[in-house]
Image (cartoon, rainbow, N blue to C red):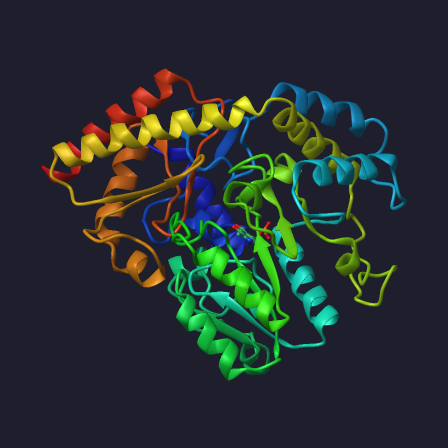
Length: 429
Ligand code: PLP
C-alpha cells in the first residue's frame, strides 16, 4: 500500500524540507507516509498508486463544489488563453470585488492578495495604521497564517507540531501579540484593561477551524463587538475558512455580527492561490495608493485566480440551496458517526456548523484550545489511519476541521458512516 507515495516521499525529503510545502501535509502527528495525489474529481481524490479516497479536506476548505468542477475548469482554460498575468488593472477585478461586496454584509471595498496569510497580515497592518496603535489580541489555537505576529499560540500546524515559540519570530514582534483563550470574554476584558488605548484590533476566527472545529459560545462574538466599540478597537473577522462556507455572507451573516475588517482566502480563489481583505470604505481608504498604509503584490488580482474564484462565488450566490444541502449532508454524517461511535462505546465530541465539523475523543465539551489539546490524539491517530485504509481521507491532525463538499452524495455519506463503524471495530479489537 502507498508504494509510489513512499518512493516519492523519500525523494521529496531530499529536495523539499520535510518533503512537503506546508507542514500539516506531512502526517507528522498521525505518523505514516503522506499520500501523493495525482488527480481529483468531485468528492474523490486519486493517489499515485491508483487508490481512491473520499475527500474530507477539500484542499483545506476551498473546494466547496468538489474537485475539477466543470464550470471552473472551463473558465480557467478560457482565461489562460488571454494571458496568465498582465500586471495592469483588469475589468475582472472589478467584477470580483462587486461580487464579494454583494455577497458579504457590511463591506464597501476589497483588496485582493495571494493567500490568507497576506490577507490577515495586511488587515492587521491596516488596523494598526488606522488606529495608530500597535498591540492586538488573538485567541489561543486560532490560526491567521504564518506572518510573524500571528505565530504566538497559533493553531493548525503550529499546534499539530507542538511548537511553543517559533524560532525566527523576534520577541519584539511577539510582545505586541496579546492572547486570550477562545470563548473567554473576561480574559479579553482584562487584556484591554491592562493595555489602555494600545490595542488596535481583535482578530478572531468567528468559528475556529484550526484547533478542530470550535464554535463561538453564545454571546462571545457579541461581547467582542461591544468591547471593540467601547474601546476604539477594530474587530477583524478572519473568514479565510468560514467566508462563503458557512453562508453566502460568511460568519457575519450567520451570526448577524458586523466586523470592521474581514479577511478571506480558500473558497474566494476556487482552488487558486488567493486571499482578500475587505471593510468599510472609510477604513479601506487608508490602504495605498488611496492612503499611506502600504500593501502590494505583483500577482495580486491575477486573472486566472480571479476567474476561478469568481465562477465559484457566482454559483454560490445564485444557488443558495447549496448551503442548505451542505448542512443536511453534514447533519446526516454527524448523526451517523455519533451513532457509530456511541454504539462502540467510544467517548467523543463532534463539533459542527454549516459544512465544517471535527471529531474529538474526549468526554468534555471542546470549547477552547486547552480542551482540544486534552483530547486523545492517540485514538485520533488510529482512527485517521483506519479511515484512510478504508478510502476516507480525513485531515491528518486532530487540530484541523473537516470540510464537506457539495459533490458528496448520499452513497458517499453512507460509505463514510460504514467506514467509521469498520474503522472503530478495527482499532478497538
Ligand atoms: N486564516 C485562517 C482562519 C486559516 O485557516 C488560514 C489557513 O488555513 C489562514 C488564515 C492562512 O491562509 P493561507 O494558508 O492561505 O496563507
